[in-house]
Image (cartoon, rainbow, N blue to C red):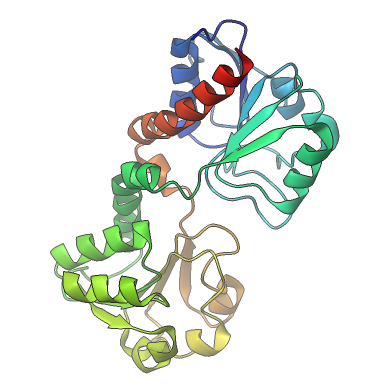
Length: 296
């Protein structure tokens, strides 16, 4: 299978996208990039576009970040000087039929792609990729907790809301560090797994009974589950860490009004950009291979 004459645009993201761009060059593609931190020495073989439209011009395949799109439709690009919101005109610059590989698309992006005949390939929920980048995310969350508390993780009361792939990795790590871990989840199988690991498992309805004694609350569900009423039950020293994609698990505005310290820890995979960039590429390359096979 030849990657010759395949143009890939890497748009938005963080330092992980630097490694993804390098991987695409090594695979033999022509690579155009914009919207992620650009190293002073550049990236060999990668064209640094002047804006997102320039990066997408003539691209067969666009690579957008894994972290979710904001409510206004902006791609995850924390270091970019401008918000990158894919417009119909911007996407129309791609070659047809175009393909976009990303974590997940919102209704606006899906609508533009349907009109232009661009195929979306979403991989946010691939469990293998989540596990591969999971250790970096867990390390990033530990860093956030350590930097924003005046107590040790050891012996602290920590509540995890949600127990998917990342939630379960966090549970196991926090238990190993000696925390008193409470897991609140809707899924009874996930609650049973948390119990078997050594955590105390709760239904979401039981949360109000336990929040008053929590030191740290971590949300990992991309759905608002902790509103003002529940947040008001927390002690004033409690730290809230939201690792979920938009809109997040925690009503962060209400938390701020209540005087609670809150960190929206998006993009924690960037803690180890080379490791995580390569793991993401392992999922991206499978999808690109499928696209190129269909073309041949």
